[in-house]
Length: 179
Image 1: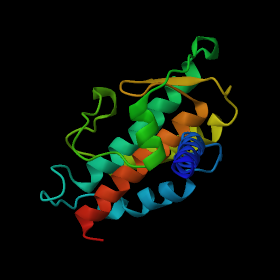
Image 2: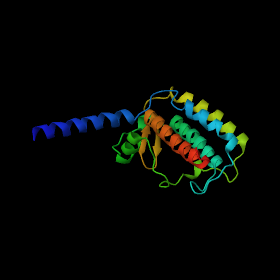
Image 3: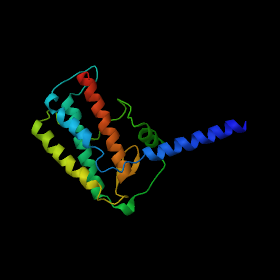
Image 4: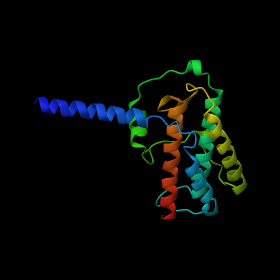
């Protein structure tokens, strides 16, 4: 019985350490590779596959870039003194697993793409995203973004969310393209 207790305790501590470690992202270059992928998909922006998504590749590219840019703006505009950390099981599960379940969430209006996504708009948003992401490092660690499901995400938790969200849409794009 003692052995089982020790094993369970070890597992709980291990899962806790992994959860804490995966809840944050402190690398200032955390999305560099994903932004290159996004840029490489610009030429395939009109591809659709309704068996995977009702939206085409351009929609996912635009939405992902809008999300990075709007969240970056909110981080900059936040007052770090108003940040408060809260236990949030949904955030812990998503940040630890690194995945967002498909088809569960509705995008806020502020990050929904227009009906027609233009190439020049994608290019401008990509430039803005690169600038915004490089500026995040200079923000206070308690700069925050109020997520509708995950509550307040501090600077490094926001980076982790952006990483997961971007990868989520890149996976959808790859599935649309049959990659």
